[in-house]
Image 1 (cartoon, rainbow, N blue to C red):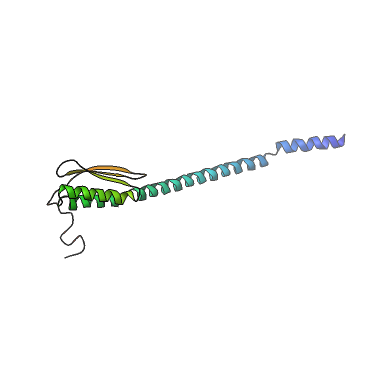
Image 2: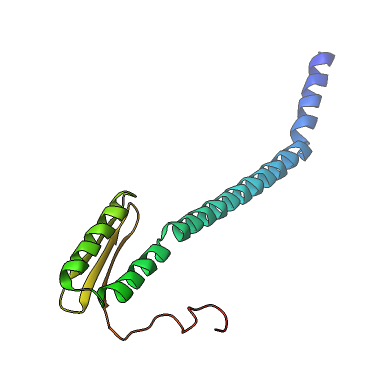
Length: 143
């Protein structure tokens, strides 16, 4: 009987001791905070990677070069030569898996279409014969 009373007394003392429960509660709170910070950090990394990939995938230099070709070459060529040049440009870009087309809308108006796996771009261009894109020195230093 004395042993049973001692066991009952120990159980009562263990029930009233809440220091272990507080320790477990605080450890769960800290673990939750660390997990949420890890998720937040991972989302920021993914967003940074996606924005840099989107920046690199937009072919602004290629489009700029196509517009420069249109402005410098199309204004000096007759209609047949323009169509031959457009066919050559189509073939060159088709080897890279990109669709490029210059549609002749009117005498000095063209529609540029650029399409690759990620970007579709369309712009109407007006070609002027006296338009000059570069400075007299070619855009470099003083000449």
